[in-house]
Image (cartoon, rainbow, N blue to C red):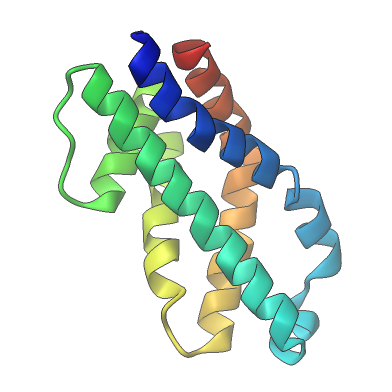
Length: 141
């Protein structure tokens, strides 16, 4: 990997690694009751999830471009294609690509829908993000 390409990827990778460490904190501190009644905590976790997904999308675009692969037009296809490089099972790639849907539904006004998506993202992140970060480190470092 060229030095310039590495310099573009590293800040996003560092951000992702730093932020994913808050996963246990949110799992412990935020449940449905807190999410619906504590506005600050709701906005905090929504922003955290959205930021992680945006960083994932950015990193995925960069890696696919650097590998000379076509970058899909939709976020879901982008994450699926990226995940296909990392995971052996199609269902894991499909699960990883759900993050795009989750990001889109955070814009809905219904707390119960957003909460379900946030819980889903936390489960996906816990299960699949270690492999995603490991893959990126292998490509960048």
